[in-house]
Image (cartoon, rainbow, N blue to C red; front, side, top):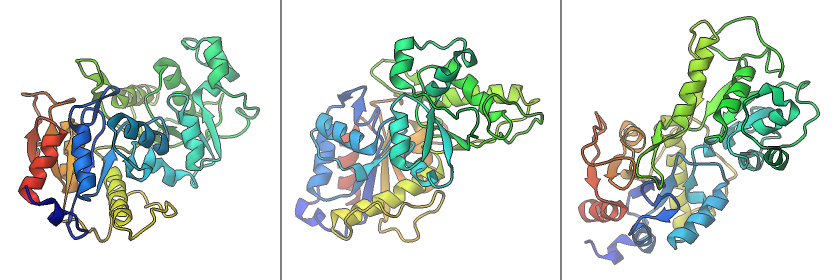
Length: 352
């Protein structure tokens, strides 16, 4: 391999972007040699970020957990979760319905949203809205808030931060608001339209994801399909117009590219990493210092497809969603490797 001294320079124009689930972790456990791969890049100052369709917690919390699990120092500035781009929407909407696990309320508030309602707050307001909710009274009282003006102040948007736990009840609440009169709870509009009464943003569309179980599990993409199907059925067959971030959308790859550039500046002390200026959604970097970026992922339809369409090189690992012999269609990676360490060492041996 190229000598380390030669690699330890700001002039090396490559970077890495890693998925987390199925690449660095499987469930809560680190994938063997993942720590070694990241440590190598840290040692030789090759910039990298982690780009995941996971979410539900603050980037600071995920960075701490990953640093502890992988025994590698990871900065919050290196974390792009599926809902991280939602930060750019905080000044565009007043009241939002933050859908997901209970923790997403804190995430939305930390992002700067001023009036955050969680779906459990609506169940608490009137449990008849969701007659088949699986929430116990103890859970409801623990995770919800009593909000006095739920039915007198309009909702401006729905943001799905991560996969919620109670799909039937959550879909009912979301469809109520999508078909409401001007975003007001307890109302229904007369017109049928592809455009919902308020905009809805999903943070990813992964149909499948990999956890500690030996078979892939349904992800937020499956949840989105159900919402879209029910909206279509209640709007005379008209499809729902929605917005999606996360991989494989160009919007998220643009956002991640900006943050990879910022991390390179931090790494070589060109910047203090101040998050004062967030990139606008959908705006690509004007000037990138990288001649190539390598996306290391386990999902051909998400990690690999998004990176190929964006013009990055790709390393498909066999430790997650992808299994040897799976059909990957047109999503042919630059290389297919056993694990993340082989991906890193192959890239350094071939391209640096």
